[in-house]
Image (tube, rainbow, N blue to C red; front, side):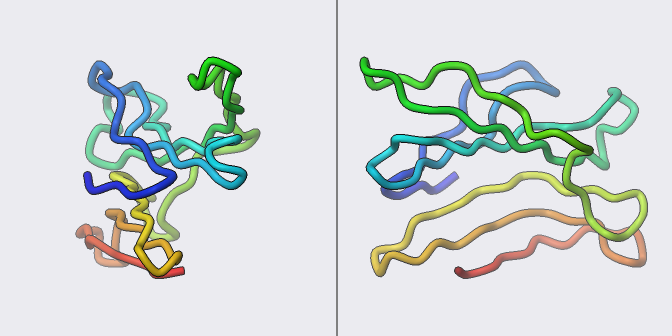
Length: 116
């Protein structure tokens, strides 16, 4: 995964758990939003949904506990609702580019990107 200012590389994690990407926000990295594999079972391996969690930076520069958002994980609007592999890249001009994979209407998967 490419990263830029305000983003950290994926954390080492066992399959089906962990934090694929985490990004902070001004003031410099005082808060973080992380995406994680939100699937309910190993049977959802090909159609993972993505959960979001939030945390704050501690005085020693590390992040403490992350708290998952309430509600269901994020997913594609198309069955079976796969949304995975989120990567957020901070660009030199201050904008950010999000890359992700999502289920299409026909059930196949697309790699997508959004600029904001």
